[in-house]
Length: 165
Image (cartoon, rainbow, N blue to C red; front, side):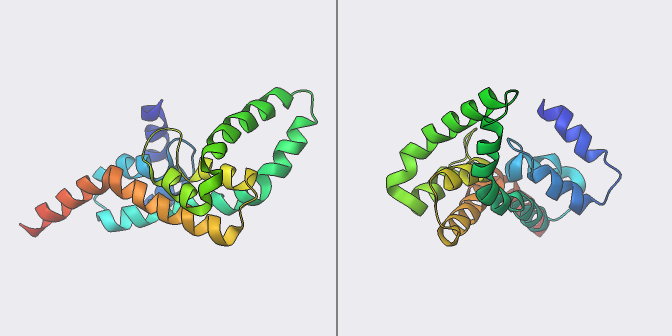
């Protein structure tokens, strides 16, 4: 699955910076895999990191503002009711663990580089918890930066060290 997504983005006939940002917007790919997809592009690590994190953050405000209304709409339709309920149930499970820690809990959730965490899921959680944007956005942004650095920082560090010699 990941290979197919990578091939799709690598072969798109658009500028590389846009490929990086678009791939970072995809759930489960996000900034972490976006960097891995384009490590061989010759782009400096810091630029690849910045484009991936920024691309990952683009859908975040939209999700925070639109997730609850979208779930409400989907719940009222016959076709998508079960999907909406399943998505809400999954997100509520993750949200329950974070509720008492508020923005700090959201930060640590997003910063933890394991599958199922990240900016997209963090945005859904912030929406379900009715977390104010002034707390949710910085927590998600900094958490995304930390998680992306943890998962790909070693490679960027090695690239930088090799570039010194």
